Structure formats: C-alpha cells, structure tokens
Amino acid sequence: MKLYQALTQVTLNDTMADDSPDFTITTQLTKPLGYTPSQLYHYIDAVLEPGSRHDQSNLSFVTDPVYIGENFDFKSVDFTSDLTGFEDKMAFAQYVVRDLNRHVSVNIDLTKHEYQIIFVD
Image (tube, rainbow, N blue to C red; front, side, top):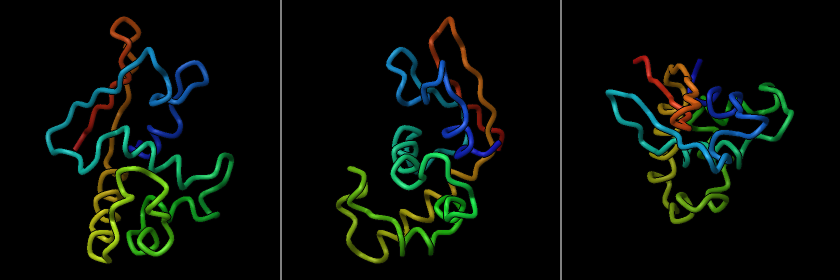
C-alpha cells in the first residue's frame, strides 16, 4: 500500500494512528521523508473529506503537485502556514506527493504500542 493509504485506512480500535494517545508511530526506512508521518497525517486530514471518493479531488491532493499548489489552503496546518511564495508552495507539494506515494507495509505491535510503518523502497 502507499503511505497515504496507510495513514487513512489503518485504524486502532476505530481510531486513526495519529489520534491514538497510547500508540506511537515509528518508521523503518532508508531514504528519509520530507515530512514526519504526523505532519503528513495532518495534511491529509486537512484536505480529504470523510467518506469522499478519489474522483472527488481526493486523489489529486496526494498525486498532483500542481493541483496541491493551486488548491491547498496553506494556512490550514501549522507547518505550512508560513509558506507564501510560489516556489516554497510548489516544493512543499512535490515533497508531499513524493512522501505520500511511497510504498509501505504496516505492522501494529501491541506489546510496544507502536504503529510501525515499514517502507519497502
């Protein structure tokens, strides 16, 4: 699965991983992410409407940097609120698309209380 799917479709007792106070998100990767999983989750939470389908712009918010640059409300999340220039906004959009489309597997370790994202690239 892709990272955006792992962040939006895997839950712990009906709670999204980043919203679960008893679990931490850990990553196993070789190539670093541009943003932390928590930041990416908050970005996704800001752009994807609950219950909406990919044909309702959702897929564009995770696959199309130009669409993100033109349609994302950069004031909606703390870590992008200071981005005002075109180049900074487009760099953000490119990093987000690159991060969210990386292939991962997910392991939930109940003994360590970890939501483990294992990158396969």
